Amino acid sequence: MITRRTTHPTALRIQILYTGGTFGMADQGAGMEPRSGIAAEVAQIIAGYEEATGRSVEFGYAEFDRVIDSGAADSNTAFRIAQWVRYRVESERPHGVVVIHGTDTMAYVGARVAFELRDLAAPVVLTGAQIPLGQPGSDAQHNVHLVLDSIAARPVPGTYIAFGSGLHPAVRASKRACDDYDGFTTVRQFTPPPSPVASLPHRRSAATPRPVGLLTVFPGLHTDLLSAAIRQYPGGVVLECYGSGTMPHTAEVIETIRTATRRGTPIVVITQCDSGSVDLERYLPGRTLLDAGAISGGDMTREAALAKLAYLVDLGFSSGRLRDWMTTNMLGELSNPAGAPPVSPHEDALTARSR
Ligand code: ASP
Image 1: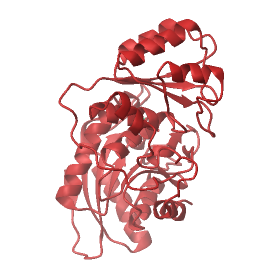
Image 2: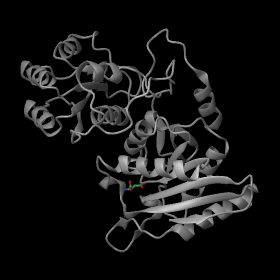
Image 3: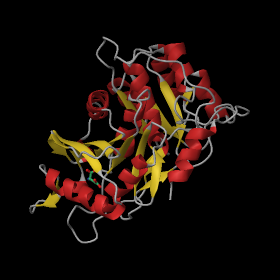
Image 4: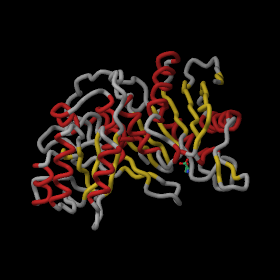
């Protein structure tokens, strides 16, 4: 942990956690790999920001013990990040926290961090780069400056991804380009919940967390693949279905889903489409899924649906209460039911920050 303090009373105070990713990678001959010990380079980027804006920045910096290519993120990575962030926010009271992360799983990890830290008083902003620090055309410096600008503008507390030309709410973001500075898209419009959501326990339930998984359906999906997913992920499976929530609905597939939901493995249906929402009442296959106990994931992104399901299962929710929470907009991850009045402050803040 490195801390650089200034004496400036108006300094922007931030905490930075570097977890790995292309941002700090180098190729030693076997393909790009993450590099640790980049504190001095990050400090230089911040100095450049101070010079360009005339704003002083006071920061604390830490790295993962083992920095990773974010493809190696596991179901615990977001939880580790969230614990670190919570601790730093409580002890250092920064204006915001920056998490430097690989882009490949940034939306998955960001969405989970958003749920874990949904009560946090400071904004958390994830960023990374498509081209490593110091290499020609690197976007590392630009992206860090974008984060600092975003935190300086005092966004509503929440978890964001700042990348390229925009600030994205993590629960609505997805990586959609691996060859463009704008690597992320806000797939669905951010819709703040109509009223604050009741508080949930913040600690994980005592029981060992039951793993949660994701499966995309496709023409020719074999029941054995679905059964294997359900066996491997007894905590629950997010099924990325077609359109408004259809899939190959053979009697075998539906029976497999019915057996799973009866045994307490929730099946959450989301859509492969980039706009519109699941409506399980619309087509016969959807109704069959509903009848077999599936839960509609509405218009959640795959990353947010997986993160939310894992979060709720880790908190110990099951059956009816799990269904209720999965279908409630907790932090903007889901559109509000028709007729619910939107709450604008968060949305306005986002619109104002997005360029
Ligand atoms: N493979 C890298 C990672 O996710 C890609 C990136 O950071 O852009 O760690």
